[in-house]
Image 1 (cartoon, one colour):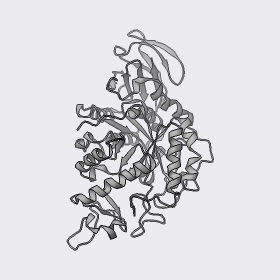
Image 2 (cartoon, rainbow, N blue to C red):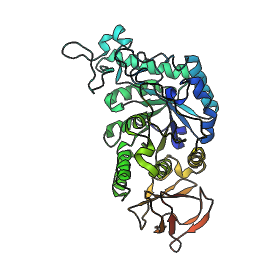
Image 3 (cartoon, rainbow, N blue to C red):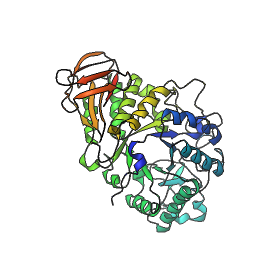
Image 4 (cartoon, helix red, strand yellow):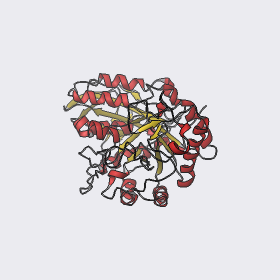
Length: 428
């Protein structure tokens, strides 16, 4: 089955919204106040973490996990009402943004309404008890051999589309749910309305799922970049090798999602500053300019310097003006202003360009129908005075997006200078 990208997703970016931790209020009303700022920053798609009510049985912490729902067709009253969320989606659309929500299809919370109304929807162990096969003790696995359960799940997804005018789904741990269910769901839900589907899985580990989803995570890239940072950014050869794997021809129509933080990474593994230090900024530039879609987590524009608690209310501190607002605004704006960053079939794939300091510097160019971009990123703490670049693929006159400098690249004019952790984005 050939599922093409929806048109609006060809140059989008995705901003993950953690409603519980976004404000002191921890609700829709509190988040709504930030929406004009996010629109100004260039956010194109809002991804809301699960908005469903949370089970009480085996609940962790004081509020429980967002991913342990007690109903698929209700709104968590801690966040507000269905009417308020409907207004949030409407407001987002008025601001030019799309909205997708987290969908947890593999499991439910331990006292989900289906445990009473449809106990046959769940897997059972030898003793006849509900269980989870992944070691999580606050959720229980659904049984995808039950065809009625599948249909009920699809009805619940359709409810959210129809009631709230959603634009798509982010599918939690998508590889734990059978591939044929996602195919079944897409065919059923997209008869009249094309949706955007983001999978929480890495295509390198789950290549078969690429046929169903528009985009998926790049965990292997993220982990390799973190390892590089922890080793003192001595060289990027392993990063370059892993990056090449995502260029496999099997993924030509696929959109890798590049990220340095999300709800899991921040809470369990550390803030992006903890994980990457000064490498966080060049990684953000890479994520927004390499072929794919960048993912940004709540508060990265500050940047948020604390690990947010997962099972309790722990609000982000917005008392200071977001220090990276303008950086992200300019960075995300590139994807709208130059079609070299489009994911359309007419645009070329990203091509790496030779440079003389390739153990520290990644250089690549992109070409659209009308625009061309050359990008250089220094993944090291050293000033690099003399970086020679093969200008053959992109020779011509360019303007650097962040400085406004104009220069002509050719075989005689092929040397660039990069500051520590520096980056240049040249546009034509």
